[in-house]
Image 1 (cartoon, rainbow, N blue to C red):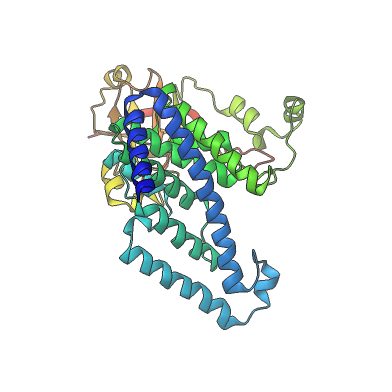
Image 2 (spheres, rainbow, N blue to C red; image 1 turned 60 degrees about the vertical axis):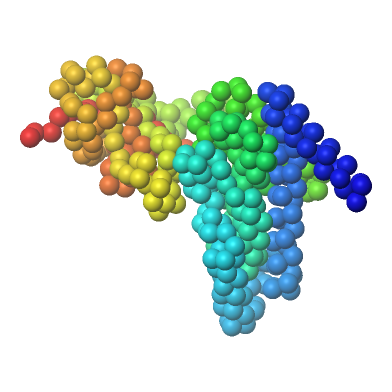
Length: 381
């Protein structure tokens, strides 16, 4: 009993010290979150493996093995897994429903990063069962939410301010990505770009520490190997190689030939994401809270350009390029420079990709979809 009391007293002293230590405390806490996040990622993978062995009578299943099983088994196992997951979500933690990333974005944007501690266990168990029983899901979203909930729990226990709490949420998410995919740089960048949108040193540095710490834990248990095998890519001789390719199929030369602004299309369009949405919005737009924050597409225009074209804030305009045109609501903003407009790519109703370059990388097969020359016109009343 005496030993327990001494341990509790020590924890309380550590708690008070960390609260008063300022930026140094963030380094210590980020390191702790990284280590714990790494162990959560290790535990998550081991739990998935355990579920695999229990329900499929082997480790990670292959298509050949699954094809040889009775039809009733292939139907019963995912169904049973879904029922268990539904029970966990309904009775234990409704936040564990969904992909994971939109839920963390919502917590950061609307609740200053506050998440319930039970999300850590609920998401780990529910997602592990779903993946292990054959659900069409992956480890990225669950580990982002598990790590973020871990960081939020520690931050709330330390009673830190809202801005640093959001940073700790990012630390947990970065640790989850880093340990899951053996990608410490990607983990930190994912957290700071997708979840927080704050590249300040005070916010980014703790996330790097958490990512590296989580990766060290992952390396200890699973070794240092890439999560995905990437084919060889053209390097130093790439530009010479690109010149030999068809310009219509190579994004570099396609942009040079077809993408520059001129008299007909005098403005530059840049596409990207808004703080409330992620990719095409297929996950974030089903969240009422996030959808309410940014319910529709818009084109950001500088005040100088808007005045020159007699465009008012909220007015619908036509944006056209050499490839297509859309009608969209104007948003006058000082965030964009004169001669530049910005459109988020989350909204199919005002699809920015109708306007942009369709050329794609010949190796990775990824379209450019980022920048092109456009013309903005005021619609007739």
